[in-house]
Image (cartoon, rainbow, N blue to C red; front, side, top):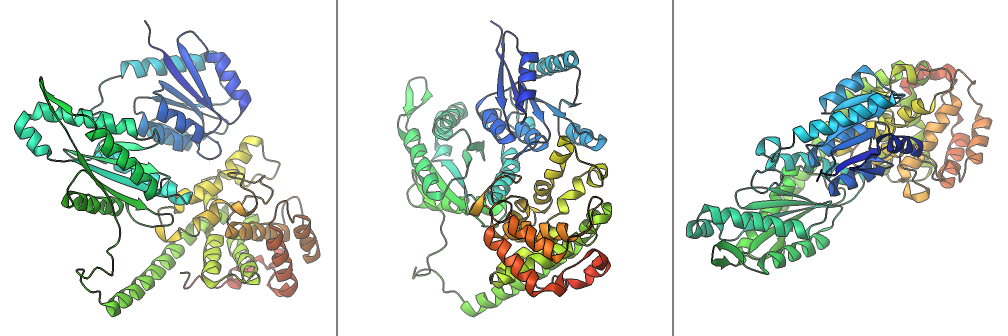
Amino acid sequence: MAKLRRVLIVDDEAEIRRLLVDLLSRPGWRIDLASNGQEALDLVHHHDYDVVISDVLMPQLDGMDLLQRVHLIRPKARVILVTGVGTTNWVKQALRLGAFDYVEKPFDLSAFRELVESAIQAKTRGRAKRTAGDGFDPLTSLWTHRHFFEYLAYLRASCRRTNEPLCVLILDIDNFSEINATYGYAAGDEVLMEVTRRVRKVVREVDVVARYGSEEFIVALPATKSSVASRVAQRILAAIRSEPVQVKLAEQRTVTVSIGLAECETGFIETEDELVRRATEALRLAKAQGKDRCVTWRPRDPQDTDAPRADLASVQMLTEQLEDINTRLKQTYLESTRALIAAVEAKDPYTDAHSKTVTLYAEGIARQMNLDAQAVRNIRTAALLHDIGKIGVPDRILTKSGRLTDAEWQVIKRHTVMAVQILEHASFLRAELPIILYHHERWDGTGYPEGLAGERIPLGARILNVADAMDAMFSRRAYKEGYTKERVIEELRKGRGTQFDPQVADAAVAWVLSNPDEIVYPAMRATAQQRVPEPVGVG
């Protein structure tokens, strides 16, 4: 009987999904649909697709990101990317990232069907047992240590962006060397495979299990707090000890594991190595406390009389030194990033000094709202960097004088996500990233990239949204002259409760009325660089 072939179609346009279903439907093919990248990723976790056909420009998770994640989860799947806005650079990037092919709309239907059939044939010819060479352990078919860490870096960054926790479990089979010595290495392999089977049966589909060492396993649990992860660990312990494992033809042995748990808390900045180090430390405690248990990592209790006393004066001095280093590091980063900002603004004559001017307005609104000093500094830094993602927008779109097509508008809307992709590796910008990502969300929920509404939008992003709109209104464009102060106030009041947070709009009006000399009109753009002081001590 012929094997069922699975195809996944990912596109945010229902009409395109229907077109491709009609084109590709045939006996022996199962076609699944997803309207965005996140839906697709959930399906890929559950099903082994032969081919994934994905649009490039989509909300939440674009095709390029999806391509990389599909290859981490299903390395044998063939991915075909489809887009209405293509460039040579995009084609090169897609192929470099491992796409089977890259097709621009509109495409020839018969040729596209043949392309999909070729992709399935390539998947079939390439089907082979997973090996360590392609990121999988040949014994257990789990991810290898290296493959796991590549994906853990993505999970950590993703959870940080969405302000969700991330937990890691490290499992070690108790007395495994004794099993090998008593029953032989073949029996040890049977134990490893049985432990793998039981662990995978307990964890969720979204969790990631890998072989970490000779008798160690590691599990990543995204969007999971330590209290929930601890319950998962208890279920793993129970599943493994519940019934003996066959080690020889007529012999069985009860196997147990010890587990160390560590949580990367929301907003907690650390490397993947540090997170795993804490889980490993907890695992050592589990072993020392008698094995067959889970221990959650916690900082040493200062009330523990056996613990060495801290030199508080030295700790305070070191803390102050680290804060100073962090401030100077952030300042250096911002200074080096200014070249990218200048490159963005040089593309469009109408955006000269835009970031500086928006910073002036955003900081003024934040102070008008009596926000604390740290919040003002975060908003200021986010305003300076908010448009850096436009470096990835083609010049012909960014500088187009006429009306943008729907496809071109989708490219423009990607700039907030691209900004975060550029900046997310700078851990000291963790407070600024949500402000940058969501500064085009609207109070009524009709903005982008995620359609957040009301107070679900971070306050800093709501302030930056108003400041950005103010500069657009005061500035001259090809289709309009700069608005007067009175006209801008009128537009701010008109947008209360739809585009703008009402309180932020009111604060902006109050700031404009009380600071008329701070407004940067078109004739003043050349001197705008001097209006905003350098970001010293951004914190």
